[in-house]
Length: 193
Image (tube, rainbow, N blue to C red; front, side, top):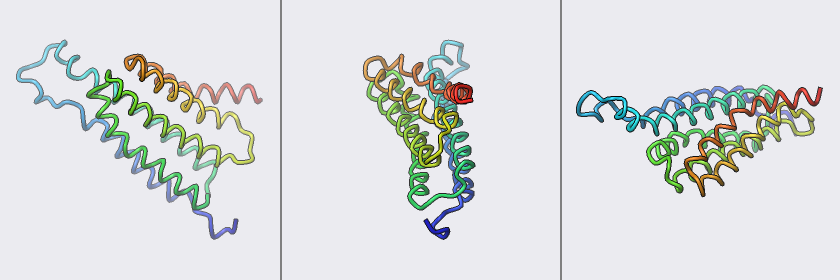
């Protein structure tokens, strides 16, 4: 590929910092406001009103943080890319922008099977695009310590989404296993070395 067809990923990195920052901040937008209470709430009221949205916020914030970290590592590994990879990165960033929407839905109706499946499908799409971008960044290179943390969330989110069909309450615990992806990278590095 001629040098003029390559795009410096530093420009995409600046855009992605903004997108991740705004999306991660907007995750808190759907949290109930203090005005939800007519009087000072007791502990039960607080748990009833805030438990579901805070659980969704925590899962989505950590997921976004892990993918932000992965995205920046990937851009460092492949500092230049062709037009197709740049557009695929933009599509990946679009899935991050939508995260506050599905997070709000999941925070309000977390135990509903349809909502849990939609949220799980969204997490799976983010993870799949991230893994695909890693595969493209590592094209021709054998670096399992970089690829394993990208592939583990795909498997976990697919399993969690399948679980959401039958047991939406359990799916959130399965999805949390994706947070162990960095451990998978560490194990792959030890095994390769």
